[in-house]
Amino acid sequence: MSLLNHWRRALALLIVTPLSVVTSVAAQDGFKPIGEVPQAPSVSAPPLILAAYAIVWLLVVAFVWSLWRRMGTLEKELADARREFSARQGGRS
Image (cartoon, rainbow, N blue to C red; front, side):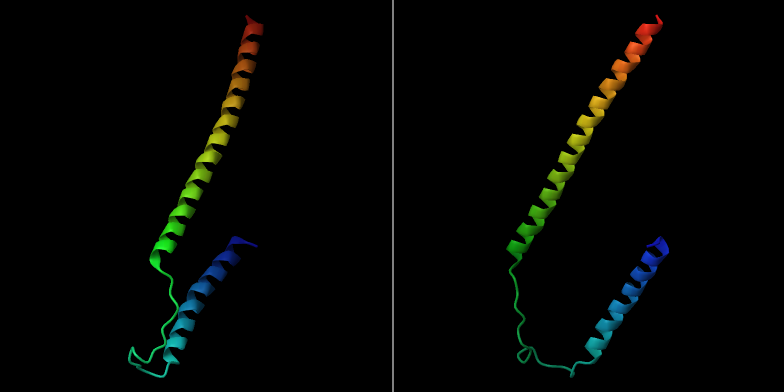
């Protein structure tokens, strides 16, 4: 899929979503006192905050581990390049 199609879909989503919210709000029966509105089920904040922090820390650890592995590979390649360079320099002398 081309980049232009991605942009078109994103733009359509940005336009359609607010329109659907506006139409659903307009379809309500008007003002209702808070006592008449059924209470929605809710989740307390601490478990959500804990989950968010856990996800962020897992992502940070995964990123650092990825960098550590790439640095190890890079150090091996650099050592190989240095050995090859010194071998070529030693052959010319």
